[in-house]
Length: 345
Image (cartoon, rainbow, N blue to C red):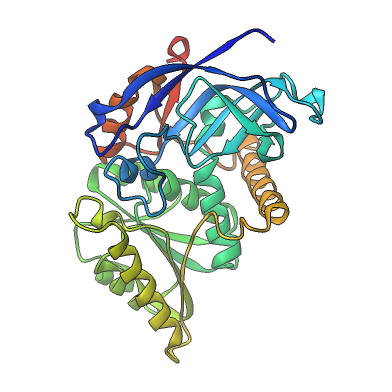
């Protein structure tokens, strides 16, 4: 195998987007059980926005290469890996490391991408699709005919969640800004202006309450989200976006949120509250990998059928990751910003 040099985007500390560094390093040959992946697309998610502020709950110490997920082609395989993997397009959930031109991964962690699904399109469905699918079908187990509220219905997870819910015969109310109203309605949701009286709008559309609320905002608004649940309903919290720019200990908002959810679950109110963590259960590696592959495979299948349409907000060269991160943080996009090789941008 010839020498491979990876171009990587390094997050050196708590910097503005233009403080990201573009570096190059030599990669070793894949070890036993590993594959070398030539990255075709990597996403810009809310996790990276928090990481650059040092506010992602369990991020590694600086410096490191961010990149929560990726799609690419297997270029080489180590011993004990099926050589048939070489040349296949695969997806992987990485948490860090995805903002690179090449990466070494455990072969057990890659999921095949079906034919007919482009790299950038598939990339938008990796962490977003797994998160949305598991929250909807595993955590909340929302049945057909139910009504749910999705906050941030124009975002990466939100837009995917809306489509998965509609595909499952679930009515969706979705919050977003007025500029994103048409896009949210095109996905099949009833739009609600997040800047208005959301609670009143939801009660007008669902007088008995909603069966589930999916809330990435956190903060004080989580109380309203829980209050909008119908008896037996489920609140799924999966972030604390409202505290992204708040100074202080990054763990405190999360711990406060956990405490509130635990308190609600202890009350005899017949409503449920959960915090979704995509990495929960990772200690049981075999089961965790099976669920990731099964759930992502289900999302990919819906995309191939065009039941779910990937929302690519923009394709930006890897070496311009600073611009991509700034765009993702602007709150003006529908779907997900994707980093791609320069020739594909």
